[in-house]
Image 1 (cartoon, rainbow, N blue to C red):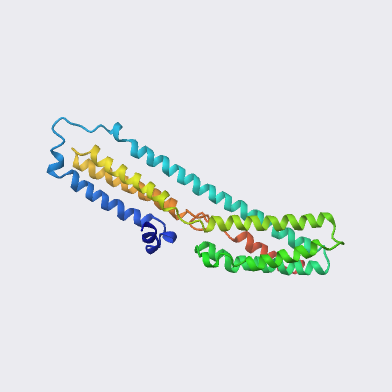
Image 2: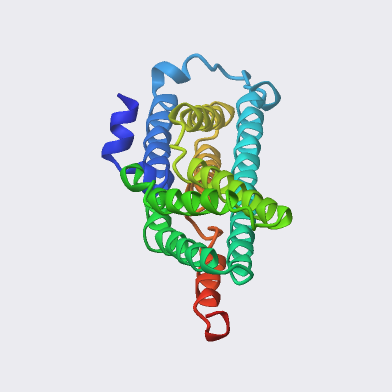
Length: 267
């Protein structure tokens, strides 16, 4: 049911910012009205106090959980950058190697250019938009490149050094591509984000109990809690994938490679 709601609200693309804001405002109003109900207030007689240190656990757990989410987000960004750098380096290696070969070099160059074009024009867009049905747009071009390299590997005239370069570059491209596809199409873990929101709600309710005898302080503290939670969740959820958000991994290295491949001096 939760997955269906997330899919209906398109949270995979827009993140959890607005959903968190609406949820926290609703919980704030409900908590304020409930705690200021006479039947609730009668439990807190004159002189009774709720000591904040005993209710700090939800806030501590929320902070720890957010730290873990932030670490996971930035680690994925670093992994995506490393994968792109390795794939780009392997592509350039294949292209430069194609100039050292004869007829097979022309086939290698054409197959390499086709793969780069497939990634830049189709596959990268599918990664950004989280379109699993088109995530393998560059696979046919990669299979052609693989076939060309396999045929070249059977050429007795090919030196052992060049054969090793071809094989290493192909394996690097294959593994780096699988890594970026896994990072791009990794869906939002509903359980992970729902646990974070649950701790945020508990923290908000805790603020209400701590200030139950001071209604104005309750409003201020709960409002500040809502702002902090929304800012945190919004920032993390908008950067949940390495290929979206303000710090998204750019396709520029691939584009630059494609431009280099089409320079006259490389023809």
